[in-house]
Length: 522
Image (cartoon, rainbow, N blue to C red; front, side, top):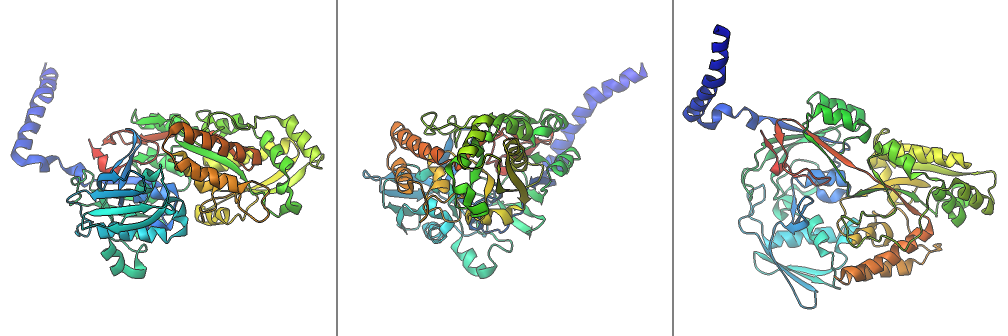
């Protein structure tokens, strides 16, 4: 009976005591979690605190907590939306965009956001060749008063929303004052909800909430990003509560991680692609990759089902498109060459190319952890090629080392990834010569056997109209040409697993652009 009375006290009296304490002392009595540091993992190092220094999406996810654009991205609710832009007016000829800025926005240094900061940020990006694919259509940008910006385009450009999303706005004064140190030390140059307080290029960074953030102070006050490149180490870190939000969970460990998360997890269809790319200009083995039949033989030798199973635990989708059409309505669905797994066809083509006994095609280069999707994909392809007599080595190195080599076409074959695409025009990064420091197959070249002029013309035609069917027609022809070159092979759209601590509310789970400002402790 005494034990029963004790249970009654705990069940009814204790909650009443907690309510009385809350009334007496306010929320401070229960504020322990408000001071808790949110631990985040990033799989690669952040090379700079200047968002212009790399276009790697993993880095961009960190920058999105610090900086904002005229537009934002909401993957859970329809894509692009107005962020720092309050109102957007478009001229009848679609060449002039007049944008009024949101009232009351300040940078983390306390300065008000002005039109001149927007002009400064865009002109700075326009001088950076890696952003040609985002800014080449802008003829001029100028301030019209303190709160309005006018963009003049040199041609109608239907996917301008992506430019307004990708180009981030930074404080002209903050950057001027930091000078050459900008990007290497903490700053308060963004309008975003968090600013960096500590930064180490090798190990990670710490962030603090900006209490003057124009949407209201974030609920999570302190954030720490830790660099954990090894996938197995990241799984262990989540299990040990050393990271609170785990994105891109390795699919081979999904069941284990989801179980450790206790239901606080979600498997999402990714808006992404893993591709296998061939540098037809590679000098390896007397320019063997310049042979069309060799490239086609390589493609027919690849078993996408093997890749899906080994790299994604069978949870991905075998890919034939560069972008999933359920995310991108202008993504081609048919009308282009498909290289289904056919090892006998691969052997026939090799013999026709003059290599009946097989051939060495060089090295498959990729980046990231040796157990991650890209590395596993490279290993599967290496085994597939060996089965038809094609020899290839595999080299997996640091992202910062590999990507410059890929963009300089200093490779034989490579595994590449792209994700977060919401307009098919993003393929210009991979096929248009203006994408300096971005594309990995150089179609425009003095020795190019391909119709690169038509490729670039189709890219331009695709942005010259807002009509979905017309754009689909242009992009279908474009993808047909690319498929016929046998230089870019879509392999798999991989599933995205997200898991988080059971005392954390993340709002809507998304595959790419999460927002810590929406997180809160339970």
